[in-house]
Amino acid sequence: MRIIGDLGPYCLTSEGLREGPCAREVEEHRDLGYGSFNFLYGPSAGGLLESVGFEIATYGESIERIGHVPYKGRQIKITQLPVEEALIRVERINGAFAASHSISFLQAVEKAFEAEVPYEVTVSRMAQLELERIRNNLFVIQRVLESASFLVPSYLLLQQVEEVNRTIARSCGHRYFFGANYPGRVECEHEVPSLKIGDVEKILENRIFIDRLQGNGVIKEDNSIGPAARASGFRYDARLDSDLFVYRDFDLKVPTQDHGDAFSRILVRLEEIKESLRILQELRVKPHTFPMRVRDGEGIGRVESPSGDLAYLVRIRNGRIERAFLLAPSSVNMRLFLRSMPGNIFTDFPFNWESFGIWISELEVDLK
Image 1 (cartoon, rainbow, N blue to C red):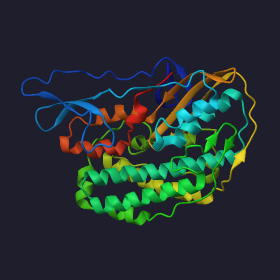
Image 2: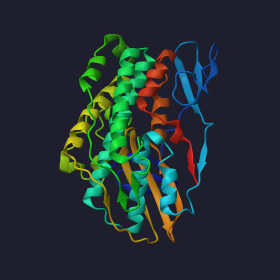
Image 3: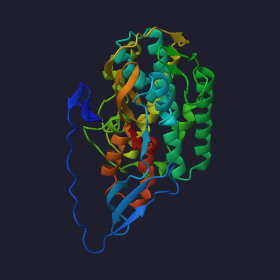
Image 4: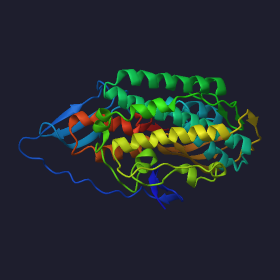
């Protein structure tokens, strides 16, 4: 059993819910003493994609302590709404992970309704998740390249990200999967993006680029998720745990690395892109509908988003959402990032930060 993270008042593990929050090691807050000082990086930090704040303690170069400063909290009301109306808000919590959020939410709803999901719908959702994984993994690598001022390869990767976006738009009607998933319905056709993965691999052979990533942000924790876990040698993947998908029918291969640094996280993401493309070649997707009988109940949905486990717990009464909780992968990865940063110098910050694929847009969400 592995611990994944807090899902509302519960601890989500690979085997289900456990009463109470997940136990964590308490950070020792020691006084750094003479010569140290604190400064605020952000909240609108140049070079970072989203506005985010950090309080950093240092003697001048090495980061000794770092903390996240929450200031971008969002309350999103979905309780007392019908499922379909709530879904519109859920899929927009983080547009980059819209497929992951909407599919996980619908899985929870279907569990509450005790609905039988057809194989065709399951396969269509797998295709969406793999397209989203390819796009976001390419984007993470691009962000790291941009941080290193490798602008030409960075723009080439943005071109490939755009190719994936257009493939998603042709397949599902929207570049970010908005409106692709409904209760009892999926609206996607089959298409595989045409990508030049060899060009990405050549970029990662550059010695200057490698030096900025190797040994940067080392973190090896059993309670980790997604590429961060797999870069540390842990073969953790919700696609292996879940009985709501059929990845085993397609011989899913989960790549791992051993060093737990930013470079390992990038290598894992690159291998995942190739594996996702292989799976997409084998899937056959078309629009499909199925009946769902509305009933009172509670359910959990969990998917492997591009950054790791993403889960919803939903309770439904009289056809409306009575309560809902979200476990966003960014909440777990933020904790891992903060623990990985001390001991690195400030110029290591952007490379390490981007390698985790954290989205502030989903980090500070409170479902009401």
